[in-house]
Image (cartoon, rainbow, N blue to C red):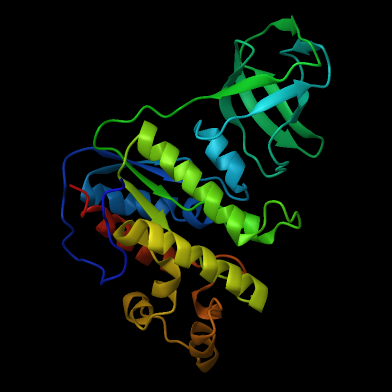
Length: 292
C-alpha cells in the first residue's frame, strides 16, 4: 500500500524537515522536468536530495522502462553489433521518438538505449563488437535506481500519451492502467512512499482532451487518495493567484472554470510558467512531509 501524502493547502513558510538527506526521485516528462530547478532549490530547505528521471517529451512506457518498471525486448536489424555505430533495433514497446538515452544492458553488453529519426538504437559503453541473431528477442535490462528505505518517488506518468495519434496508447484507460502498473512496481521494488501527481490540460484544450484529463485524474485520485496531488485543482483555485501574486484576467478566470490552462499561468500552450513551477515545487515538497 502507498503511504498517504496530501495535495493542496497553502505554501508553508517554515517547512517540516523529516530527516537528513532523504532521496526524492522524480519520474515523468516535461511537467516535472521543467520543475527540477525549482525543486532542487526548494529541496535544500527540506534536506532532500533530488534525483531527476523526468524527461520531456517521453511517453509513459519508455519512462517506466527507463527505471526497470516495464519489460522490453529488442530484435537487432544487423547481426554484427559494433561500438563504433548506433545499433538499430525493433522493440516490442511503442515507438517513442522522444525517448532520451538511458543506461541498460543487452545480451550482456552495457550501453545506452536511445532513439532518433531512424528509430531505436543501442550503443556500447566500451569498444567492442559482437555477433547476434537477428531472429532473437533480447531482453533490455535497465539500470534500476538504488534506493534507501526512506526514499520517496514523485511521479507524473503519461502526459504525452494524451497527444499521440495512436489509439492504442492515447486513451484514458491506457494511461490509467499503465500508470498503476508502473506505480505498483515502484511500490513493490523500490519504495512505497510515492506521490502521484495528476494532470492539467492546455491553453487550447478541446472537450476530448479535457474529458480524458479529468477521467485520469479522477481514477488516480480514487486509487491513491491522499497520495494523489491534484495539480489541476491547484491551477484552477483562487489560491494560485495569491501564492504567485499574478493578477488574473477575466479570460483566465473563465478558463479556470472550463478546465483550460489560463494564459497568465502558462509558459506555452502545454506548460506552466516558472512562477507556477516554483509554487508547485513547494506544494509537492510540503506534501512529502506527511510520509512517516
